[in-house]
Image (tube, rainbow, N blue to C red; front, side):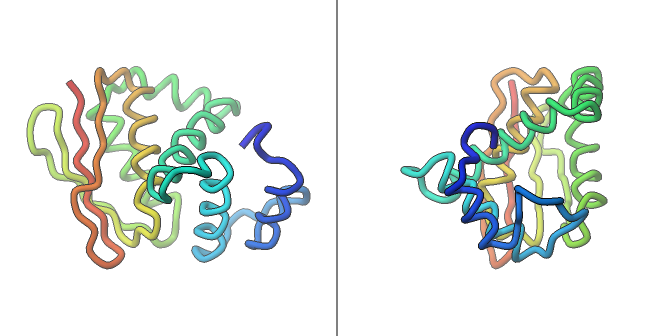
Length: 161
């Protein structure tokens, strides 16, 4: 969160179960992650609805990751992969990077996909994540929209042109 992580935000995150001033855990329960995401969204885009603010958090997450040694190397590889292969890897990485997320991707056209994720509590976060990934892969005019929400499932329309 960079400069936006002031004492007030750090306190709200600590209350949510994430102590940014101490040692971070290797993993957090889903409830803690969702609560921390909502705090970050309210901090980074306080005037926006939750899904729009969470998209800002998703993009900032990728930007922050790219500033790490591993993230910088990975995003360099993403540009070489291009958008289609990046999406395939991203969906696989989402499944292996969490212990709860399921994904299914269907190609709708040469540069258009439907991506189903579950469980999704704050769908906007993934909009920002996918947009940032597409941008990093060199996709021109990327667009990501939530086209359906049903229970804990979200379907995203992902396209570029």
